[in-house]
Image (cartoon, rainbow, N blue to C red; front, top):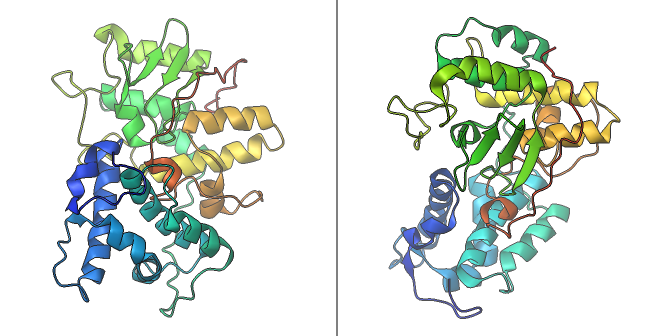
Amino acid sequence: MFEVFEFPVPCPIDTIRDSYRTERSFKNTRTVLRCVNSHLRQSITNINIDYLYPKLWHDECENICKHLVHHYKAHESDRQKSIILGMSGVMTRIMGHEYNNPYKIKAAKVAKAPYVIDSPKVDPKPKSTLTWEDALLMLEPPYNNIHAAIRCILYKHGFAWRTEQVYNTSFKDIDGFNWIDLDNKVCHVRRAKSQKNYKLQLPDDLVTDLKHYNGDRGEGWIIPKSNGTRYVCLNTVSKRFLPAGVSDNVEMRNSFQAWMMEKYKGDEEQIAYWNAVMDIKTTNGAVYYYNEPDVEEEESEEIEGEESEEIEGEEVEEVCLGRYKPASPGL
């Protein structure tokens, strides 16, 4: 966007809007940047909280990092690293990938020696521990409508996708969007959080159920609006088609993760397949919710603002991860 190492003049935050894959990611980042500018405005009065200040942010890296981890009460080192990597992603967008990013360096340091936070540590709210066996009972028919049927069928067979991935999937090959090819029993993943392109072989029983409930609707978005177009704003529909008794999508995803980890413990090929289905790097989410089974601690795939999530990388060559017939978790 800008010349490497040449700091541009301040400009509106909206300047980098198009570099984000989703509107939600951009809005989350904008909230953080406004927080940073509000903090700096206490000593520099002529700051507009809705502007980018790359030179100032570069010079005030240490000050900004300390403020953010205190503001968000981030006691754990991985949480501090996540927050700082969010700023790293912003600076990389502005300055380019060859920029010597101080936030990236700081993120690596706090991973080993985190800041000490004075505020008391608040215990997280108790997490729901819905088991996959209980979840399956909620996913059985009858369904209220075709939208609920399609979503429940995906979940029933282990495709516990994020809400955005569900609504960005079609039964038709549309450039830039996920495509479920029912004829060849393959899902082409092109629009997911990982920002990688790959293919998944679909279980036979999932294909059978999708064909049955899709009926004569033909090709189109798997869960379309009433006029047949794609949902764009998901805030009002994220819970609309969840089964009764399920509080949110994360609960369903993590209940399946915990079940999958236990069932396929030691089977790296199966775990790799289901991690690809759910578009996750690790199974830390399930460990956090259920504390079972024990796995080596890794960075959480749900980290907000992580640089790898926010900066669109090079396209990855498509590889089919389903070279075998995976057993349906619904059976």
